Image (cartoon, rainbow, N blue to C red; front, top):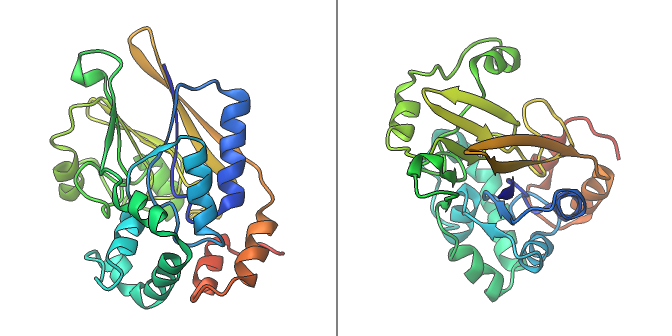
Length: 259
């Protein structure tokens, strides 16, 4: 059994198409799943939905799907509520760009998906956007990567919010996105896999599109993480040319990328 998972498409059709093409051309997977944040932040949210639906991709919803569903409701978490002045106009713009059918599809997405290769729940692969409890709390990389990225440990293994989010987790493998950085973190007897962002770069400003292959073989999950090069300039040009409000906010995720 081989499952391809990517996340955080953020309305970027060029990255989405590149990942889908790579998966179909090289990996021979049984199922493709996207872990939320599908539309907000890129040049063509409707095209991204079309690409995912045409490919038969399954999906869970992320925090930006909730923003699209409730565009006049300020996010509960402090980080996104501080940015709401820039996010909300773009959310409303996305709603206007999507068809009724596309909005209905987004609103129908589940919080989580489970892949069960055996009857043993510990063998399950659980897919969520951010964590098993909600769509906002970020699971950060392992402690070594945290030190590398931030110069300090900001989420130790005994972090109360992390422990609370994971305490009911039965599956030994958790796949998620939200924090735009590919990583694998051992937490107790669990493996926490950030499949990373398909589109918007994370703290390292890596512009490549990411996905992860999970293969269940001889009683265990094998994890392979990949990066796909694509023409980022096309997305930057399209986003700059769009009439999206607050587009400079999203262009900022790409750092000093020249177009």
